[in-house]
Image 1 (tube, rainbow, N blue to C red):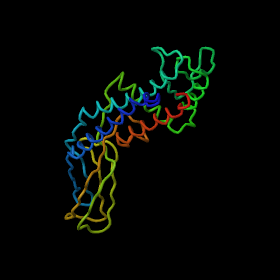
Image 2 (tube, rainbow, N blue to C red):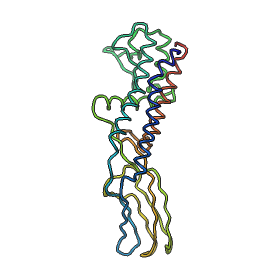
Image 3 (spheres, rainbow, N blue to C red):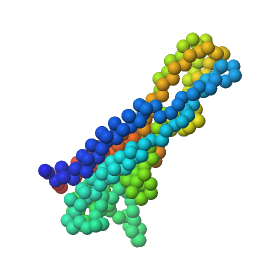
Image 4 (tube, helix red, strand yellow):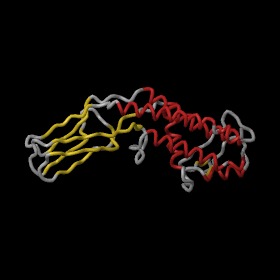
Length: 249
């Protein structure tokens, strides 16, 4: 096996975990982990749909997420160890949002802390988020934060969130408008409003929610993305990053 292949073994395992995670998320969503209720107003010009009895995301999913995140992040540390001349227990792959300075105010160049060659340090600097020219840079920051949270603070909490809908309205009179509350499904909270220009006491509304499992700790604008989609993007960002160092492997 090539050196690059050895470094990517953790990432390959993360991708296998993603397949298991995808199946678990789909099973949870198929179970319809909520009850959809309709509440019309007194003159039947507005029908508000809310969710009740929203079930929590199974712990199995949260734990799988943590494993995938950690194996993805660890791939970069394995890269740092492989490229260092004198690796130690302090050797790691730094991910900096801003350049760091020493006590004298001079900018510190990112390093694996393993006495790596200068040419490698140049590439390491080029992939840092604070440089902003390397396409996956923003995802590396997210990966670092998610991994630190899972390692040191708490299990990454998943939540069912509304990302799509389908509806049919039958027997309506006049025009109507539909508005949705996108994002996490919260017990007792509205998810859709059907507003009619005139009373429609006999209207029939078929509303189908299409939620995904998302991460509560992912910042906007990616917070509404499915957890599986986000993690596939993170694994791709790490694979691209490793590829930048291919000449030294």
